[in-house]
Amino acid sequence: VHSDGTYDVLYEDGDKERKVKKSLIRKVGGSSGGSDGDDDGPLEVETKVEARFRGRSTWIKGTVVRANSNGTYRIKYDNGDEEKFVKREYIRVAKRGRGRGRGGDDSDFGGSDAEDEFERGDKVEARYGGRSKWYKGKISMVHSD
Image 1 (tube, rainbow, N blue to C red):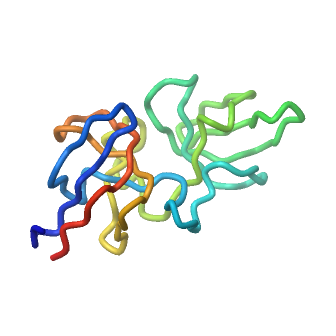
Image 2 (image 1 turned 120 degrees about the vertical axis):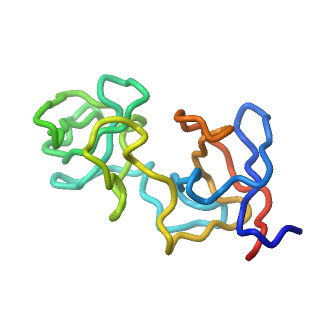
């Protein structure tokens, strides 16, 4: 066990990465043991969210302005854009402290905030190899500090 506060991540595609810095990880959904995550359930109007504009990989901050009868959502983005039929799978509830940058590209949505701690089994996204793209996985080992 290492004492440097890093984490091992097991990615959905089977890759494993050791000693990933906390700043390169962000929580998605909830932990395997149930959590306060709300990234799968229905959303209410005026919920602050991040959505993948036109289904692309970039997460953009915005607000739910309508829940459509077909299970999609109308999103008004903070940059002024709007989408009428966004699938739930492309939306996540915004987390306070996320998006400290100017808004737009994925790099603006930094990793975990200082108060976030991960536990084994937590569902996360991590920047494999420190690159800019986020990949889904789960925490497989915690190296306490």
